[in-house]
Image 1 (cartoon, rainbow, N blue to C red):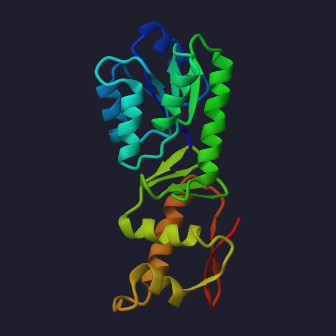
Image 2 (cartoon, rainbow, N blue to C red):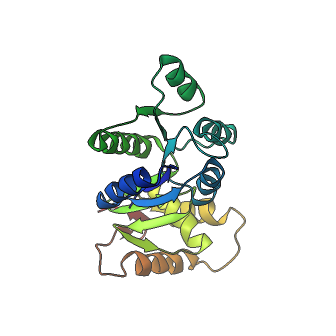
Length: 224
């Protein structure tokens, strides 16, 4: 799944250069050139990482960071600034930034730090479930098979979440019915088979390897 990076930078040439390098590395990039636009983009587009200039029109980068953290947003933030005093670094980190790079910086080092923070986030984020080449984000409700985006209905999504939360575990039909549809479900007894078929059609649309396996007489299991 392609990581989405929000770049908030008011220096046009620098913003264009960093955007070009990030795009070349395969990232999806959104650019904002002031603090208010950056804060709005962060809230609306839910990026995986923010590169945030300190000195911005409107809100400063530090103020943007404070406002994001005040709402519980844990997106990794790397501050970009010409301020290089220890007190400045402390202020930026205390505002909630995860990292700090002083201008002028090496683009190679910036890209390395981006990779490190994204890797750490993917390892720690409980909202992101991964199995084989299938990725599901419970917060954004995005599903990817490799680079292919998959659209699911609400119940298909709930069923896939439950299966992915128990990889390689054989789940009985009764257990799936109770956990996904509820204990008091009184509908069609074949509802699980129907939704498993729906999921398989969407997950295997391009003849990909089957990940949801049938355990005859018992239930289903996520298995390569």
